[in-house]
View 1 (cartoon, protein in one colour):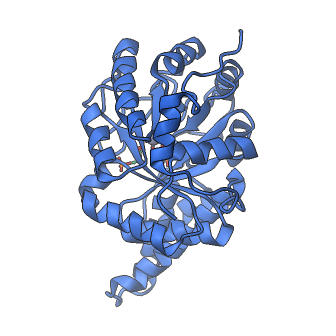
View 2: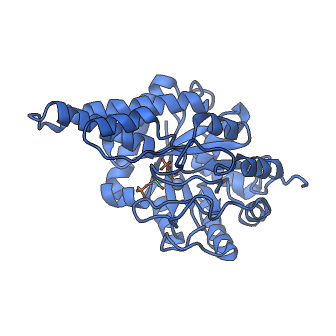
View 3: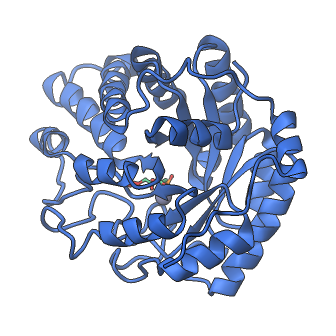
Length: 349
Ligand code: G3H
Ligand code: 13P
Ligand code: ZN
């Protein structure tokens, strides 16, 4: 199956009332793990690459690896997404490379660290939307700022520092025409999100629900949504790792989000933990081993297990065969003639 538009994938998810995991990749084994999990659970997938991933793997490698996945798994709809684009140029280069979806994270300035103003965010996101939609490419924007720093990206600080204001979310969606909207509800990137099991004082599901009430047709996106399971933390630490005690986003909170308009759920850290734990275990138990396949294979299997579990929990499992891919050219036509709406439905307060 050709790579599909993320908009199509999310519109279908909205119809079916489920969420779609967006899993970060940096190498072939991670792509293989996601695709095997998708095959096992018959799930549509979003494969996403950060700027750091594009640098690490090199653009052409990444693109061709994901293209290989689409050839090898013709029954699986795959959207290829730029995670946390920091500028118009980053998004443009992703689109020119063949990504079918981009995130313009205008919540931060182009340095990827400093929170931007609302007007700056609207301006750069709108520019990306104009460029992308003309080419049939999906755009995710972000309003509010997540906590934490990953690979130099992020404002740092707590997830509570810049929670999304629902009124601003409405204005942002109206003025930019984004296809999907990432909001800040207290989560952070990375392993250290919460110091105890999160309750409503730190994980603001009430804000998410308030935004969904105002924007009932807008696809919401939850970033920083790894659950950081205890068993994965324990494996890492059991075999020489030094993770501090930490809590992630409970799956049942994500499921509450999915019942309230969340269609895309970003997960990276859980897979990093699964991979690292599996590699540590092999090297700890068999220090004589030096063939990378001896530890990369269990690492890939550990990630596949996490991804398949999330696909089932998010509800995307079983939906791979629900629809035929619409070509990117058709999607572009839809944006142009207005059949693919970019004007959000806004409900009264
Ligand atoms: O946005 C965060 C993702 O986990 C990607 O992280 O920028 O370290 O590749 P990265
Ligand atoms: P986690 O660090 O919680 O996996 O979040 C990943 C993410 O939001 C990628 O954009
Ligand atoms: Zn993110």
